Image (cartoon, rainbow, N blue to C red; front, side, top):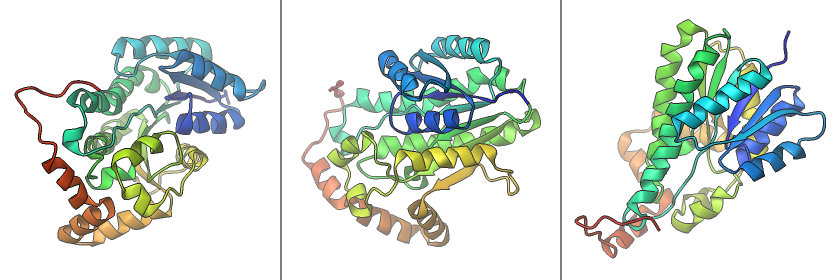
Length: 282
């Protein structure tokens, strides 16, 4: 059997780096791609002399960048077995405190970037029956999160896209999954803490290797129940089960309490936006 291959975006640090390390250790050919060329090159070198890697840099919001990167990877690796749409950004704060341009950028990277990846990778994936896509979603996709409103919306979109494509493409032999961790100890948590108190309330109980291991198991599992969603960590599992069983009013009450939504609302009252002059990027 030929060596399997995986293409990972946002691979320079955090969860992307951990996924790259896990699959490199498993003997895969690993494509590490990130907008930061120097950082992703350094990350690839840190995987050791036995790791088989291909590196490159591009912006996931650019379809042409995707096309070039995928073509270069397949030329070097021979095929594409798994695409991991990991690149993502987060901005935290009361909705009116976050510049509109920043919120648009979150949608561009987290949603359009995933759409671009799935669309551009399809010609390569359909050549390999049994190929897969793994999208990085979040437990924030389970219910809208105050102070993380646009980020949560972006991950809910990824979750919905995953469900749709997994159904559309099963006839092509392509499985589409997403993984949904709660808070993970990465540099992104610094941004979360600026505006959201949910992480402070629940704690940060996952590290990047936990997510990487979940991706590894997802890619290797036999899908008996046909569920594209992978819950990472006991907290996400408990929250999902509780929200599925609870009435809507109770879910709203719990989400509001965990996020201190009333405090965020009070900040909104003190920072009303003049919509005739939309805020610019900060």
